[in-house]
Length: 200
Image (cartoon, rainbow, N blue to C red; front, side, top):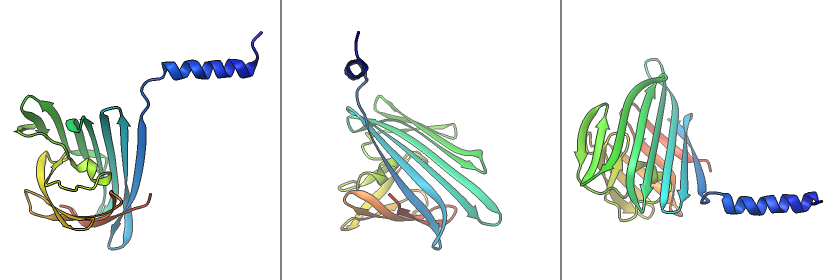
């Protein structure tokens, strides 16, 4: 008769052979501030599994403009061997769909559907907006936006300090990094100017 400790050890050994490829998950959390007051949060998750990396970023805000507005953004992007494979981004206003953008790697570039309007990006994407939290954009000049389906210009302004310029409206966001991870940022959005600060 097999004793329980031996049975448990045998089960663990078997499961180690049967388990899928291990993955590494890292989560970052940021608070969103407007004029110094908290109005929401950002949760960014990076999952590494072999040559594949998946980014999952959720942003939740409660804004008081003329009336109270609940604003949510979700972005998921998948990379393989450092190349964007696909992404899906959605924006919600008061829990109702407001904007969506999907990006898929095709021969010669990417098929992009922004609110069902199709266009094509004829280049390889190695750095995108969801990566901004986890990887300092050193030597990066273009950042692909999964939410708007466009390239934006990134410039290095100093040690750990970068400015991203929106290619459509020319508005600028500022990013500060510590040890390669985003520490805080000043975002000049279409709705309101906000700051984000790392919590953990």
